[in-house]
Length: 248
Image (cartoon, rainbow, N blue to C red; front, top):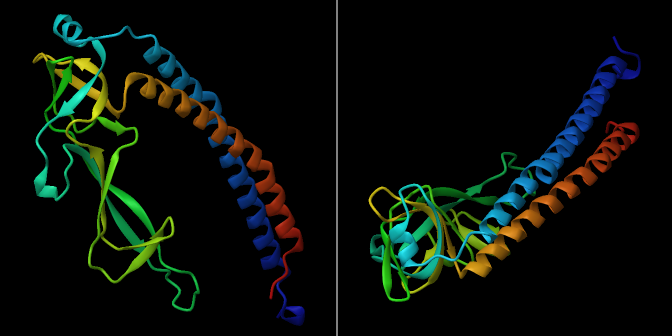
């Protein structure tokens, strides 16, 4: 039987568990921040430098390239509109809005949602470079980036959650991609069949693509430093919480 209905040992275990949790979470913040700032950011910087120093390329460069050669070209993209998806895009990413309801029925927390990636669709396309056409091969692993066109197709679900202040029904689909006539920069390699196997399709010209690569480097480095700076604050906050915590 515990004096005054207290259990000092259990209380001590809870406090020690909270301390260990605070230390672990702080360590994760520090490790993730260091990885972003000193591993991922330098790697992205090397990639940005490499892309910026690739020579100017045209349709003749593509034709003369050997299979596997790296290519960076800009032109006007065209392809078949994917009408079956009810959107006027020729290449796109598709995401679904998944709404979660708090488990505790007495909680005042509102439903929350997040976008879940479903697929990336990049079929065979054509890139026009000064009147000459270059085939872009289908590649579901290609990355679509830049100021992509966005189409939202809402579902009829009554379960909703806010996305940037806008209520969206569960099951809503979001499409982001390219349309016919877009000025597009393609970074990839010469395919065995003579076309270009894309790694990245960027909506915009080459200078904008290079700028986006530099922005990605800055973003990773800044995010890493912020995470590292937050690590001691998380630790101190956790320890103070343990010290001043009182059981109700």
